[in-house]
Image (cartoon, rainbow, N blue to C red; front, side, top):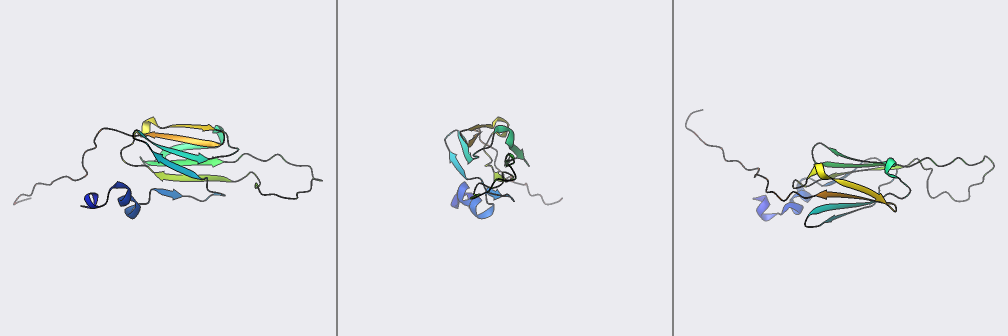
Length: 141
């Protein structure tokens, strides 16, 4: 009944939020786009290389993206700091996204370019079997 009244995005908003944030120094800003063939995630990762980022699938459908900033070069002891807004270089981020059921987790691709991590999660066009299953009722167990 809930599927008929509340579609997939609305149902997930009320019953299980699709995006979780973990402890981090800063949260990487993210866009989530959906095309007819894929879900596309774009995450700002300025200054990070592909070696600083991990993209993993956990528990079957949780996309976990982690980034650990590189270490800042040490400065001479006689250096005077006037402004320090970029942090110490030790900060990282961690994002967990619950993926929809109709995706091909074994075909996920990721790329970093110009400070943006793009993760493409292809959709599965085949119909999944319904989660509703009728149980036969008999007069005796």
